[in-house]
Amino acid sequence: MPARPVLLTVDDDRTVSRAVARDLRRHYGDRYRVVRAESGADALAALRELTARGELTALLLADHRMPGMTGVEFLEQAMDLVPGAKRVLLTAYADTDAAIRAINDVDLDHYLLKPWDPPEELLYPVLDELLEDWSRTTPAPFEGLTLLGHQWSPETQELKEFLARNQVPYRHLQGEDAAAIRTAAGLDDDAALPATVLSDGTVLSRPSLREVATRCGLATTAGSPFYDVVVVGAGPAGLGSAVYAASEGLRTLLVERTATGGQAGQSSRIENYLGFPHGVSGAELAQRARDQAVRFGVEVLTASEVTAITPNGDGRALSFADGSQVTAHAVVLATGVSWTRLPARGAEDFAGRGVYYGAAAHEAADCQGEEVYVVGAANSAGQAALHFAKFASRVVLLCRGTDIRASMSEYLVARILANSAIEVLTCTQVVAVEGSDHVEQLVLANSANGQTTTVPASRLFVFIGAQPPTAWLGEAFARDERGFLRTGPSLLDAEGRPPQGWPLTRAPYHLECSVPGVFVAGDVRAESVKRVASAVGEGAMAVTLVHRYLEAIG
Image (cartoon, rainbow, N blue to C red; front, side):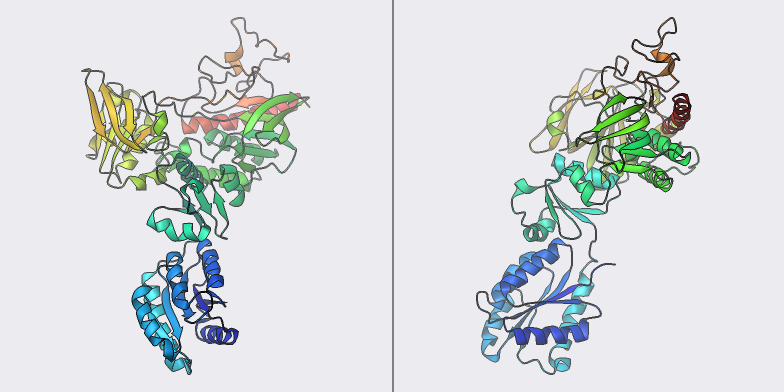
């Protein structure tokens, strides 16, 4: 339930201060919270705390004659913290000239003469009118996390994506919209950004994802030293493994470096997933699966990174980046893939500042009325182009091949070609990204005619290739030439023999990698089918093989 708006009164005379607060509480206590202070400095400190917590201040009632800081001086400074609050000056008859001058100096809404008895005639009617006007023009208070940072900052972009994908309510403020909160939080220096302001007023300057996760109530450290199975990666394959493992009685830990859903979780719409005839967003599908996993008792870690997996007797020890370690009977690797970096001059310089890999659905709203460029020709690029077309004035889909039908589902092709807001440029690649503090233009090359064109642009979304994040695994984990993990039959040589160093008499199970007891599911597995349904199926199959493995080791 949102906190009641605040009526703040400040008067250095304690008796008067209590009397004002008493009369305010008597008439407004059911709708507003009354806060009183006995000096301008104390009142400003209270306002900073209230503003940082996201609480609304509806009215400032300040006595004019106060030592150290007059009421007018207080109201002038308070305008930077609560510009929307109504401002009332309490004066003696001799100070009316000063009060009249303050109407212009601090945009004073009203001045009241002492004494105000009876309040029913001299106080409440004035404040009723002011508060009614304030209520009409003031939006409801925001109860989530506030993110402060420049839109072209890679660190700000990383935090936005993390919060959105983990379903953490937040708002991103910058420029004039952020001025009051930055002042209240003491974040006047841009070097302190990005920063997050939590609902309790806690300010985190340039926080890590792990720090934000912990403060938002997301678990980042395992609650036990041992599990039956640890699933690394919370995309469709990892979520599928976790749900089936826990539902079948295995004590399960699910570890994710950023947020559940993987690449699929960033998809604006998945329309060919079984059981959803009208499609489902990747974020919704991921959240449903996460809720299902938690309901079955899966322990979920967020913003946690596994750095090594090593045999430990019959178990497998997993080391984390924070130095902690857990042991499990078996492990399922479902780390998915990351987008291939764009091989264009300047692309890395503008990563997070106009060049984005993948696209969370929340980013589309930031493209309202803009021209957006999308690189890629598979389903992910097609889905993104269609989603951006709902907001952007124009979407240009860049494909280096001659026809997007070569790698994109026909239902997406038909919709893209029928959408007047989307233009498809085939045989086209981005060869350079240029700008100052963010992307301002792209250099495009056409392989069919050899021509090079420079176009204005501020946002480029990249959906090309797939890079498996397997470099952190030791040499004991066999990979193919592209770094994907080999499993089962692909580990055997021409004579059907397991890889060198394989310690068991049996051959590796179908999804088992070159380290016994470690199974691989989803996109990170060599020769896997890159589809959400296939990943979920492999996750379920991996659990079946985990059971078989556990039976064999007793």
